[in-house]
Image (cartoon, rainbow, N blue to C red; front, side):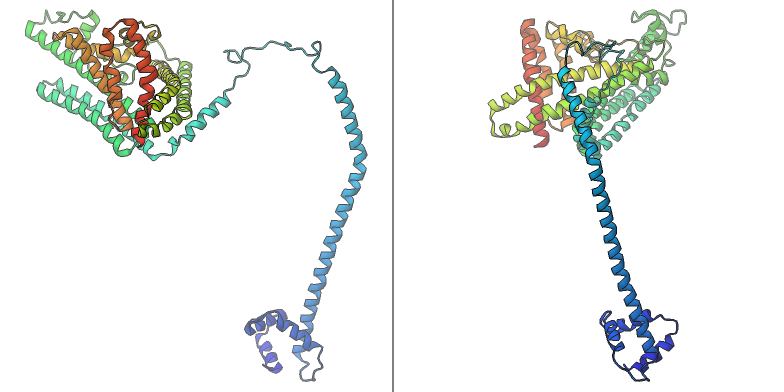
Length: 521
C-alpha cells in the first residue's frame, strides 16, 4: 500500500486520532508493534516533498506519544524508588532513635521482676480468703457456666449427623400423623353412645388399635429411620396405644354398668343411683352421667398427661409453675445430650469392635466386650431413667397440672424382682395391673398364669419397640422380660443377683451389641 493511499484513507476517516489510525492499520496487517517502529524508522529516512505531507505529521505525533509514554514510565519508576528509599531511611532513623528507650524500659522491667521474684508467694503477702464466695454449683453462686460441658454434648450430637438426615424429619412427620388415631377413638366412643351394635363398636376399636400399631412399623421400615428418631416414634406409639386401650376399657366398663342398672331396675327413676360396682360416690355420680361424661377437653388433657390410665377426674394442682417447667425442660435436653455423648463416645466404638468377633464366633471376645460396655450401659440406663421418669414426666405433670407424680418409687431398695417391677415404672405397672392382670383374675385365671400373661404382654411390647427401632427380630428384649417370671420363683436374694448379672451387666450390653450388628450387617 502506497503512502498516498494511506493519506487518502486517513482523510476519509476524519475524526480518528493518530493512535486510533495506527491501531486500526496495525490490526489489518496482523501486527500491533512492528508497524510502529517501521514508522519511526521511516521518520529518519530522507523523503521527497510529495511524501512529506499528512503522513509526516502522523509520524511526528506518534513519536511524541511514544516518547512521552517512555519518559513518564521511567520517571514514575524513579519516583517510586525514591519514595521507597525515603521510607526505609525514616524507619531506620526511628529504630536508631527508639533503641535506647527500649533498652531503658527493658532494664526497668528486669529490675522489677527481680524484686518481685524475691517476695513472690510469701504466706504473709498472699491472702487467699479476702471476701465472701459461694460454691460454684450452689443456687446462690456468683457466676455459674456450663459452656464447656454443653459444647462437648452439642458437639457429639452434631457429630452424630442426626440433624442432616432427611429420614429423621420424615419420621417426625409420621409421628404427627399418629394423632389421627386418638381422634378416631374419640369418634368411636361417641358413636358407641348412640346405641349402635356392640359388635361394630368392638370391630372399629380393634381396627383402630391394630392400625395404630402397624403404621409406625411400616413407617420406620420404609423410611429407614435413624434409631434415635425411630425410638421416639415407637415410644410415642406405645404410650398412645396404652392410653387408647385404657380409654376404651373405661368407656366399655361404663356402658356395662349402665346396662346392668337398666336390667336391674328397669325404667324406675327412684333407684337409678344404685351402686353396682361399689364405686366411691363421686365416681358413681360421674359414671351415671354417661354419655355426657365423654368430654373432649378432658380427653385431650388425658392424652398429654403423664399417665396411661384413663379416669373421669384427676387430682390437680392449683397453678402452673413456669420456672419449674423450664428447669425440667433444660434438664431433659441436657440429659439427652449426655445420653448421646455416652452412646457415641463409650458404647458405639465397643459395638463396632464386636462385629468381627461375632462374625468369627469368638465368644470369649464377645463376652469381654460385653463386660466392657456394661459400665457405660448402666450409666446410660440410669440417665435415661432420670431423664424420662423424673424430668420429662414431671415437666408434663406441671404443664397439665397433674398432681399425682408417682412415676417411680425407691426401686434401688428393692429386695427382689417382684418389688423391683412394682417400683420401677409406676405408669406402666398401673396399666398392666388394671387392664391385664385384674381382668384375668376376674375370669378365674390362677395367679401364676395371670402373672405370666402380664409379663408376656410386657415382653411383646418391648420386642415391638426393638423391631420398630432396629428393624430386626432377635427376641432379646422379649426373652429378658419373660425370663423374669421363672426367676421370681427362686429365693429373693438369688433372683436379685440374677437380675443384676443377667439384666444389667450382661443382658443390656449384649442386646445393644447384637442389635447394632443386625442393624448394620
